[in-house]
Length: 344
Picture 1: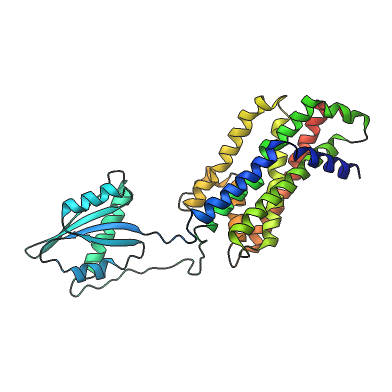
Picture 2: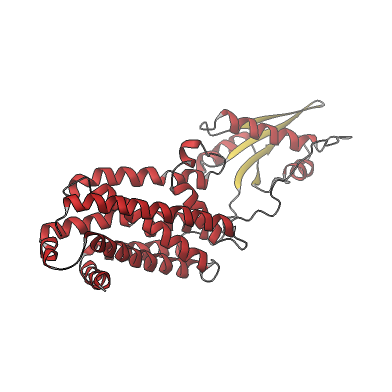
């Protein structure tokens, strides 16, 4: 009963401040961007401008190179036209194919920012495409697909796991600390000394306020953007557990400081480090150990699972269970520290 009363009091107070409304404004801005700016599906192809010299069979080249579904080939009249097209589109590459006698040669025309790996990949793709058109060519390459039924999220929905992690899950990292320091400055904590509220109840009420707001903003954005696609049971579980973790971590970090200004540096560094998991989320081939050990890494991919048609339920449950236990441990560490710094 004491916890419930404290929670209701904190909830009323929190909605009288601007912190929570910033979260709702941000949520609505994200919805607007995803619905009206980001395409529903990401089928973008890499532009590749190609000039064919005299004697080069246009049909042969387009048939052999058009098998690459990720490239959109556009024919131009000259090498200069290729360069001009690349100047207008900095994401494009190009090439010129010439027939000299019986020899078929080519020149790659690039932007200049491509690394050796990209250059070698383009060169191999171009040569492989031309080889397939040679008489008597036989492809002996064996391709083994490791995950033939792997699913990719649509362009618009693919941004939601990152948003839910950084905004709805980790919102408590900043805001809960602000509320604690605000109570200190306004004398609310001193007023609680004449009530039977304990430090644990006081902190737990803050956690519940952050959880309520995190669930509200997270579900608002998800429903408006993704509709009925997500598995909301898994999503609610992940939002709850990750929000508890973020808030408990925010409380623990803030316990080492006596003002919101002094704690902002540490809180900002922590949230930036946790955000690095997004690098591997958008570039799955780049997963160094230093990113995989971040708590945000399994959280992010667990959120992704909740949006797939066939989610990996065991992975979501294991991730949720681990971070729930971790959240409880961090919360009790924070409570022990606050018993020494808060006089309730």
